[in-house]
Amino acid sequence: MRYREEQEASHRGVLIADALLTILSGSFILIYKTDIHPAICITICAVLTAVLIGVFSTYIGYWIVAVVFGLIWAAIAGTAAYLISSEDMIWGVVIAVYAFLFALFLHGVFGKLKAHIRSGLKL
Image (tube, rainbow, N blue to C red; front, side, top):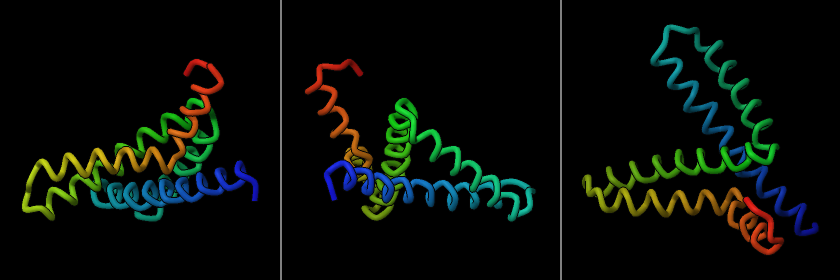
C-alpha cells in the first residue's frame, strides 16, 4: 500500500468510530429523551451518520468533523477520568486535553497542517 492509501484507510477507521458514536449515542438520547419510536430514532441517526460521512469528504467539513468529534471524545474521556479519579477536576481536564489532541492526531489534522505549512498555502 502506498502512503496515501494507508492514510485514507486510517481515516476510514476513525470515521467508522465517529459514525458508531453518532448512531449509538444519538439513538440512546432520542429513545430515552423523546417519545419517538426506537426504530425511527435509529433511522434518524443512520441518516445523520450518512450526512456526517458526506460532510467529512469535503475540505471544510473534514476540519469541522475532526474538531467537533475531537471535542466529543475529549468530553467522554475527561468525564471518565474525572469519575474514576474520585472527582478530581485536574485529572479530568488533563485527560480531556490529551484525548482531544489524540483524536485530532487520529483524524490526521496534524498531517494536513504540516502539508499546508510546507506548501505555503493558507488555511
